[in-house]
Length: 182
Image 1 (tube, rainbow, N blue to C red):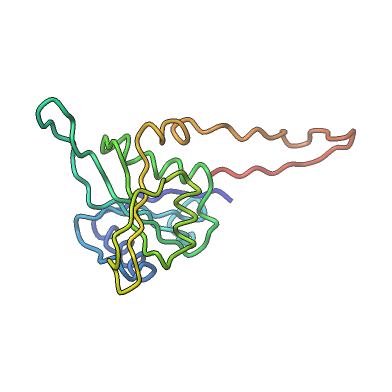
Image 2: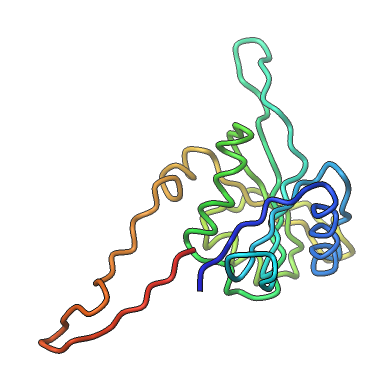
């Protein structure tokens, strides 16, 4: 099954933020956040699998001879892990680097959310620090980040999935292979 990334209008953006807010209780949706939906199928009648939120964007600016900031926080909310294909992740990570010209993206995750921490590290975000007792007593904020150069190496030009075409032969027998796009 292919996935479609849904670019919402303002009203739809609010709906996606509220959907994500029900799955991420420590996230307070607000109008400066931009959300994209990941839909299982080609159109809006298909189930919503996940939402990616871009927030806390700080545009790049020159201070002296240095380029400062150029950062964006990303939050993922999902109803199912089926959304997390290589192509979909690559597309969602591309937006802050290509559209917003970020030099870095970050995620901030409660230390109790081990699954999200594993996911973020699995897609290449690196642990950068901890804010002790940020969410509650004993619940720390785990900060992960990905530099633009790390994204370019891992995600900008993902390795193609090489598959045999439908009807090719394996071990002398005819097989049919089904492929799925993002």
